[in-house]
Length: 230
Image 1 (cartoon, rainbow, N blue to C red):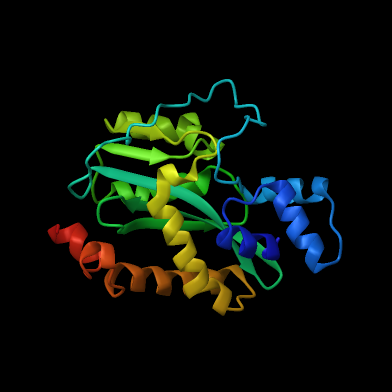
Image 2: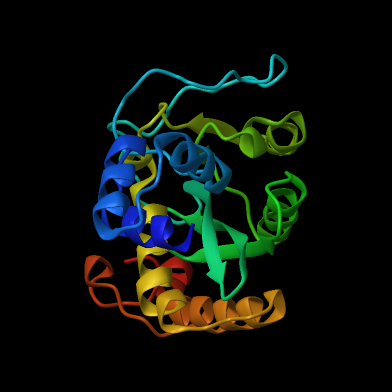
């Protein structure tokens, strides 16, 4: 799973068959069924349209994508979220983050040892304590289509937007965040326990928000742009 994570971060267009072939070339040989099972467990899906291989929960509504051709010009106009896999020396955790699209500012985040919806709700609650967006964008993962999650957004008067199936580039800025987190911090660390991962992620995401300049933000930090605009 750690090796799959490294390869998928580098080659997000890899599906099950390409991933299996790449890993088998490096030895030992692995089979497609095992790689498919592990990629599903990790929540990984290659970036290209393809048939929907999983059935949605019948009570989970999927919302349309609202950001196409939309000019995003101010903080709190659009927020987005996603979940990624974070490796430990023996095991792994999942990381969810809430990001302001315009400024790339990380509003909140949380880690969990499972993909239950609760840790996503915790991060959402924390973000909503400070502000509210006009639109909230996510993928179609069961955590974000759950009645608990969408109900919280709708009760706050927030429009819900969801990416198309297999189109991670609909949420491109948070995908770029995951690459930064992994290459700048996770792959250079050797966290053994969840508390170490949490402390390391806290340090990096604080740096990302307050110290790391972004060329796309005219070399300002996300916090500066979130508070002051461009």
